[in-house]
Image (cartoon, rainbow, N blue to C red; front, side, top):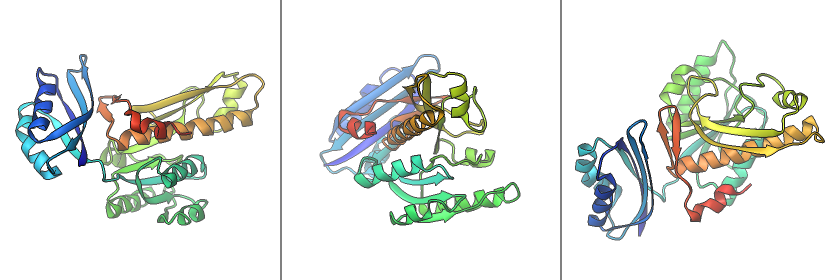
Length: 294
């Protein structure tokens, strides 16, 4: 049997779940997992359904046959083949903890993606990436060449067919135009001290203020720097007995785990944009263990 996922966003209305369930039953499909959320504030409905086709229906058939329902209810919807891995580009500068963590998870199968390229504005991780048989692109960025550099990045995106860009501690601000073009398809990670501790050495600033919680936030990138819709967050406790270097080490760990979980949620179609926020459906029991690996 072929396994698929259906994602749906539409205005709130009576009968949406019944219409979807009835359609899948008529198509000879068996629902294996289903999540939905009705946002009463915005009047938007969100649903994710995993199902198996017992009659061999393919994506084209399902999409075409569902069109009347989608049009009647004003749905934004898509069917996805669970066997097809999402193509992802990783971007990194000189902090390699998130990159190395993602490469490890990818290598052991805990993060089922196709890494089609790694892009960096430095050469630091070329050997690491090439040793994984992944194409490495060094694209330096300056104030003078930034438009050309972003054009080269987009060339890599288009030539590889990448569906997602992950900023694994890529320390360059993307232009408004690139953020708009890739809306909902760029994920970033940073510490959760913002807006309190900006600039250099945020962990040192946190240490000097006696912070007791270190956290990380992963979000979609928008033109508003570090203020895009949040996908995943986590924290770890620190004490007065720990040093600034301890803060940095703990911060790197939580950043790596939060970013991996955010990517896992995105590639499994569990994240829905809802204005300036997100709806994130929980992982099914079969995928939760690998997502939490850290």
